[in-house]
Image 1 (cartoon, rainbow, N blue to C red):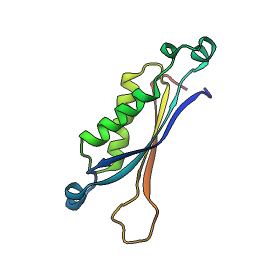
Image 2 (tube, helix red, strand yellow):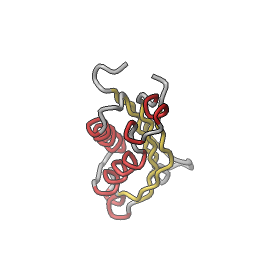
Image 3 (cartoon, rainbow, N blue to C red):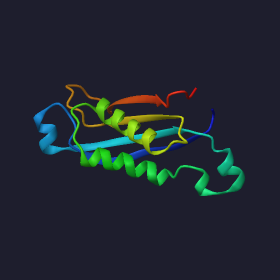
Length: 124
């Protein structure tokens, strides 16, 4: 499938990380979502009911990232992906990106991050 809904650069404040200071201080994270689904019916009919709302996708990601705490950004990404697949049957696959620009790494770097893709069982 070649149709995608993308939401990029969602900024959230969270307390994710392995170090105790990360829980105390918190930091900014950036999220990106790329949902794979058939957009032809919505495009032909110009009907929002035939697609997935990017506002709803964003709300799920923001809620998980701001209301829960994860030691690993891998776990944050996995939780977001699973929630989106569970909530939107039309989505065949979801790619979630989590960037951590203030990672406590002893180097000068722009950010660290993870990107995961999860497919609905049976989806190609």
